[in-house]
Length: 351
Ligand code: F0G
Image (cartoon, rainbow, N blue to C red; front, side, top):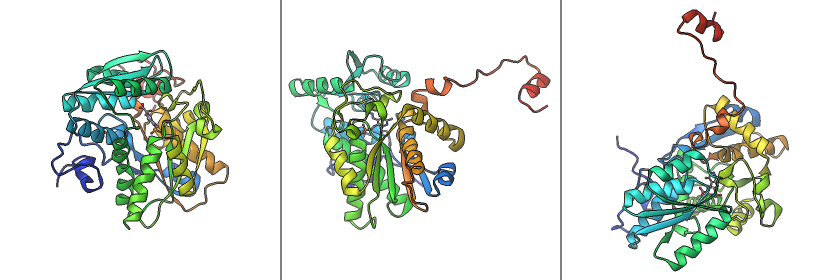
């Protein structure tokens, strides 16, 4: 038996690295594909969850970051920069440590989850909070990387997409073919672009017999692709996807159209309902943005868009521990009892 080696070593021949490339890795990827019993019953389908919160820094960003930091190091960069709603910055900060690089991150002031801020801080990133939203942060980061010696590691860097496409490879490798439908949350739209690329490559090489329909879901207050125009002041409790002008907009529309899929919106209420369902009924704790995929699947099922009997994969993109406020909010406070078995048994309803 051997340990999973990380996405670059596992899929080396399908990634833009050479034989001599020195890989910067935390052994990302190889994440669980978990059968979702309750979702399967609700939809009459075979639903699986691709649990990307199981990556080293707790989100799918690690797949792209191992590629981006590996390449930045190979090209001699001493510093990297990213704009982020939190997860990209956490991942960049960790991989920069592995590579011995300085990491700068630009985040929207007051709009990133505490766990993600803690990750960037503890990994020693230089953090600037920007008095603006993610889109403003990305504009700034692009400008800085154009004019200063610092490499941009956002998903506008094409090697990020290359790394992230490996999630589609893993799914086909595990299921022996592509699913009928793949469902994702959409923010800056890099991930839906990456999955579509991965599925297309496997189909082109005959490893999969087909490609899935790609279904993407944005939060209603941050749904520029659904609206058909940028959203100036995006809002949603799912801060990871609070993005008004996605960088990979055109690529996401291509994934949607070429696959015969769609991109729709889900409300914060629907997101939180899916978030709670996943935790309470499937045993999978994700961050709110991740639940947008499942909220979308349930919405589509209610609208009669889901034919029974299909094989469906929902990517849940980030770990629930990153943003636990929503788990605690609205939940009953645990009661305090004395050190007394009878009292404990009574409160637990066992007596
Ligand atoms: N889910 C989570 C947990 C995310 O962190 C993100 C994006 C997405 C979904 C959307 O993916 O942008 O490829 O469409 N987070 C970025 C960040 C923007 O900065 O961490 P996308």
